[in-house]
Image (cartoon, rainbow, N blue to C red):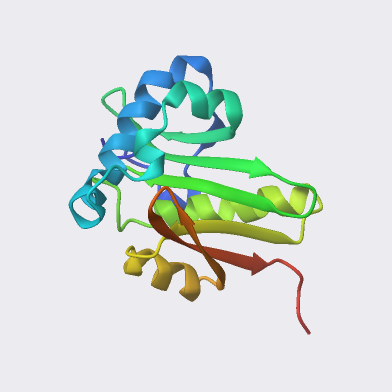
Length: 163
């Protein structure tokens, strides 16, 4: 499922998902999030949501892999004052390569292009490695929420340049 040779992560071609990606998107979401099931005792929300719903209700961007699979996907929702990163899914064979970081950078590019000064996301409170990564990338924890019996940590990153 690796990216094609000669296609480094920094140059990964991110494209808007289409209806034809539905099955591959669903499979990717499951591959990317299945490792969290034992930790929280349930499917994480991105794994439980159908790909058809994601394609209808959100803005979905994907990175093609090889062997007819997707290497990564980014699910966004635009609001008047921010861009929400609903999900970042990276195929397990690509985790640790920088593809997730590239997708997060792309989300920030999308926010700036829309004149938005903030990117938001949320993650399960038990996903401590994600919280640490997001904090390292400049996201600050802004609140906690209980949703369907799960504790979610809300995070935000300002895109306003500071002097």
